[in-house]
Length: 499
Image (cartoon, rainbow, N blue to C red; front, top):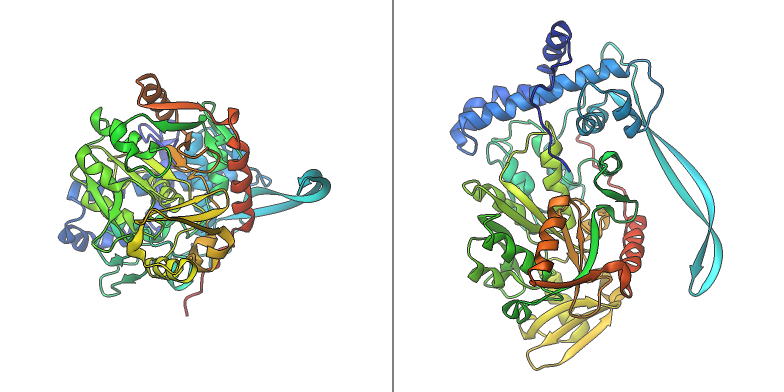
């Protein structure tokens, strides 16, 4: 969905207008910071000189495009993103909606929110009741800028961490052009002596600024994809189970994520996979790069503790094609890195994103505490953890299975997970989880045509057995209900202001 082509992007723009827009573009603080730090960036070695200029050129092109877009928006009434994309045809629709959101964050555009209330009939605990529901409508209008106007300066992502909303995905660490950011599962540190204040880390952070309206607009504008307010863009939804015996031995539910990854490796669609496996401390996950199917099974099963998986992206630069497995916040981060600040991906070898359903994650220390407090067991006694039918379940080496209500584990969840509205990894290519499917099966949502073609081939090849998720119980309806519930409970991100 986020493939953006810059070929001949300005072919319809008059030379004089293009020259004036480019002149204005190069005053952008991100472009200046990045260019002025060229020597430091190249000495760091993360980006080659060619990569440096590819990134810089793309940033200038995108900023030039935004200056032209601002001229087109002068005098326009507030419009929806889709209306702006249809009105202005100088650039591809995806570029337009991307640019409007970024201009809003830069301070050039106002986002105007209209709230409407409607009454609907809902079944609550088996009884139909009339309830009120709020609908939100977002329109965008160019600001009237004062003479002393200055565009917003994007702070380093330390502001995200200090505000208590960082998901510790590790993406900023991989992106940072001078390796000033260090991230682990619980902490984030920036070397202030190294930081060049380019704001790239903030641009790609999944918790910096919202992009749900952008993603909705892209979904609506695409003629190939269905868009659902409940589960995002998708092609098809399945319930499926693997037929591969080796995967059955280690799977969490249907073994589908592992089966997809094996298919990608065996068919040379990827050279490597970024996933997580148990570290030397059992149940404490660590990011790993998998090249061989024989190592893939070590990554099977859910690890409920957080892992900064995206720190491994940088280490996978030398592979031509990789797949990344992760939680919704990680999938959102990867898409942000494709769209912002320029539509030019920092790492163009990421070919497939496999997103996992996720209500919330836990710190490793809290997993240990949870097992001790609620089950009176040591973490090393466990062979499996799972969530099913409103219960948190553990399986022990003794063969016992113990369970408690999900509400009892809420106090142990990471507080920063409450700022995530995404249950089903809406920004992934494949989304996989247990919700909606029977025991031994996984729910699978394909979100691109290519992903659906791959999954259909897996079915026809006999690698998985699958049905339409709408045709089973509890099925797609349950996925949608829980997804909506998570969206409603999501807290608003409020960043602390710098002193």
